[in-house]
Image (cartoon, rainbow, N blue to C red):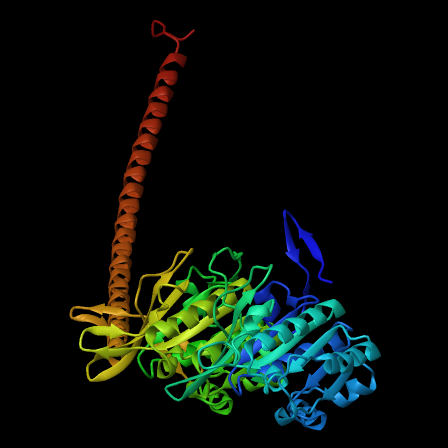
Length: 574
């Protein structure tokens, strides 16, 4: 019997996980345990595959044996049909995990009487369940079981008996049903007695098909009510839940390089935030794919996985073309760090592209994703539909902390610019590359339109693509506007010539100054020598005068001494 389990403050119905990618998230855990669920849809919608995958994944992943009772296809046909999806029913039967029983019903043999009942089916199904201890059951399809009944009262009574019997057996059951004209099923009764009803649709709009799943009802449980795209490929069923719009994802302060140092410099020198969304838009031939490829190359050089979705070029074209600008993407592909998925947008509808991307991302687990270009998606949907799809993709990638870079083609008509599929307001950073036409040349200019949460340059730089790589060059502001290309080079040459002339003039002036200095120093030396000569002459004259005066003073002293030595007398000798 069904169990009720407590989850915080509320009681929720016990559920069986299906193992189908995305479906358990939509239903909050899977299908109601020990209750019948109805899968309805038109032919080719995928009812049988969904049901078989529920049985097989239950046996393989959860160790719950299952019974497949089919009223249309034989066991051999079922085995062949699902073998291409990687499911080996023969092996599972030998292991006692799956029991397949084909019940042939001929409507001409069914007699509509008051005593009509399903006792024979109950005995046969009960034997199969007991034989392998089955926890899961699949009945495909219910119309064949009641194809001969037209009395609604009997039909309703037998349906209730069938559903009640399955509940008593305690098995989780999937019953498939063909969709009616004005109801979910042909009889219009099955959906009312089922505890859970899943509707599968296969729509074709503008020659493009989209598969959609919707949970019509789910007794005793909350569930998603939107239409969810799903994909059937070589790995089976994949459902894409519509991403939550709560905008409560965690963000990272870490910065990662764009692979172009000069572009990183315009972003404060550190590049973009990890987990952010980046839009690179521009006209054809402006280098959007080159910028995206450099971003992929930088990611792989950090030993981080990168996933590249291309809608215009094949992987070989991309790797060949990028070699011409100095990067080798093939070595990253060979190392398992880069995967390039190329397809035309018209291969799927928008929702199917979203599912395919979601599935590949979950499987490859990249740190960066590139989508080049998103403009091509317009061929398979309106602007609003493309925007809706991209919003969900951005939300999913941000929840996984995956950095994504989109490229978008700009169409220029007169003075108006139109593109970006309405996502420019959603992305965290927007880099715009545009043509700069002057002097009969077409050159490229690049600038950052916005970059949330960081300081960034508001300048327009010339964007040059060389065989050595990408480079952003400072533009020159001339009297008539921005100078790029040959005009910039001419200006650089003029400035270089002027610098050389100024250097030469300064050198000539320096030599003239040096000559004048030497002449002046010579004059100063001559004057100093003349001064010293005059000074020597004056000193000699002064010394001669001093010597003369000294001699004269000595002579006077000598004369004075001679007079003193003579004795006075009368003139007579004694």
